[in-house]
Structure formats: C-alpha cells, structure tokens
Image (tube, rainbow, N blue to C red):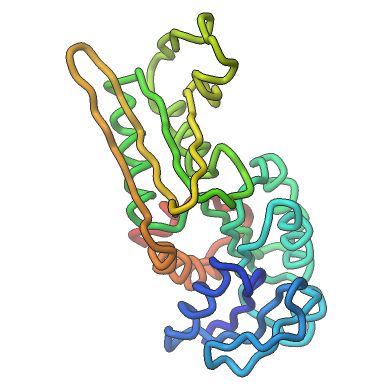
Length: 259
C-alpha cells in the first residue's frame, strides 16, 4: 500500500484526488490538509477530518507521498516542508519557475523526488508531444490556452511547458508580426521562449489548449480539452505509483508514461 496525504484536499482538484486515491486498492488515504477548512469532516467516506498544518500531519501519519493541489502563494512552502521530511512530493499546483523547483529539489534528502506536472491529463501530454514534433516542420506557431475564471496563474503551466518543448525542437524562430502595430497593448499576447501565448479566462471552462501552426497555404491545429476534472486523475494516480522510483526533480508526466 502506498500511503498518500492530499494537500489542498477541500479544493475542487483536491477533492477529485481524494476520490481517486480512495478508489484504488493499492493506495491508502492517510491524511488530508486544508488550513481554510481545518476541523471539518473530509467526507467521501474517508472518516478523516481536514487538518491545518502540513508538517504536523506528515509527522503524525508518515505518508509515502504528498499530493499538492493548492495555490501558487503557498505551494513553495508546502514542497519545502514535504521534502524536508524525506517524503516524495507530487505537485499539480503551477506558478513556480523551474529554477525555483530545482532549488527546492536540491534541499531534499537523497532518493527523495519532487515530481511536477503542468498537466496530468494523458491527452494533454500527447498534445504537447505532438506539438513539439510538428514544430520541427512548421515553426510558425501560437498557443491559445483557455481556463476557468478562478485559475490563479496566466499563462498556464501547460502553455509554458508547450512553449518550452517547441523551443527545444524547432530549428528556427520566425518573426511574430503585428506587435509593432498593436492598437491595444497586449493584443498580440505574451512571448515565452519566442512563442506567442494567449490566455483566456471565462466561467464555464475547465482546461483547454490549442496549438495553432501556420505554413504556406495551410494550417494545423492540435487541441486538447478537459471537460471534467476527472480527466486529470489517471495521471495523478500514475504519478503517485511511480514517484517512489524517481529522485530529484522530474517535470512532466511524459517521463512516467510507458515505463
């Protein structure tokens, strides 16, 4: 049995993680932490109450893995606390730069893993992989990502990761025209790794991304849509099962798929 603590367990993603962990025969939910709801019953048939302090919960229940879906403002402290205890950490909270993640991973005891996925949906990982392949042949590309209106960061971690993968694979960086003639500042989006990104935030959305390529007389669109948060759970469960065999910083679910 893999003993799992869920941090941010009262949130929308946290509750899905709780349900996913409890549905698996080889995973055991041993604690749930959410400071804003401390003392409340977690429900879901868990028999657990939500706890306030992550460090105390780790010391009391000795989890094998902490899964964090919280907020960019607190995730760095949560990771530091988890790694300091020698516990593997699976993080779905975005907003931390990779150099910050590297610095955090460097503080962990040997053999402890900090695993971070910008997106846990298997289809989204494939979308990023296909986009990186397409960029070898069609370097003119822009990314449009769409999320619900309560998302705490923009651009999304998925868009940033996609831009990074495209930058690694395309042989040239074509010009991104139109910035010099913007009537409204920002109309042409943000530049990340020389890839233009556009962020949409609206109620009713979950998580969506389109990577749009243009070439002579043609376009190519690669799109992924998560229409329900359960789409992320197979990836979370995979990471919980695999993280114990990893060490240091691992970014991206693709590193665990197919192993």
